[in-house]
Image (cartoon, rainbow, N blue to C red):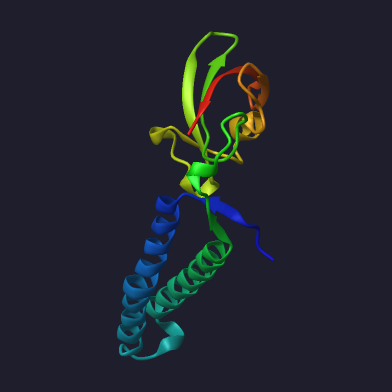
Length: 157
């Protein structure tokens, strides 16, 4: 059984669009490549055919995986988010205690993470470290470079 994951409406739509593209664009393209390679004769020594069949297998695996993710996805009602603690979809302003640098991130599902858009995964070290903390709490975040202490400055939606 797959794990339930939580998404914004926008994030789930993005996954569904990606699945639709795989099924309606990429799948027919690979079928055409297989048919074209098959028309070239002997399949036992046809590298194009083997490559197309392998690509088809990989695509079908990706489609099945994405279908499972979508089947277990739940949309979060942003209006019900409790801003007293850090949860998924919380916008969190944190201060690195060592260098006093402040950052603001939105905690999102793994598939929606985008550092450029300041969205970090709930499964990332920072996301895990901040989860459940309140304003004023200090989170010890374990990173490859050691433990970094972040103070929770603000939590919003």
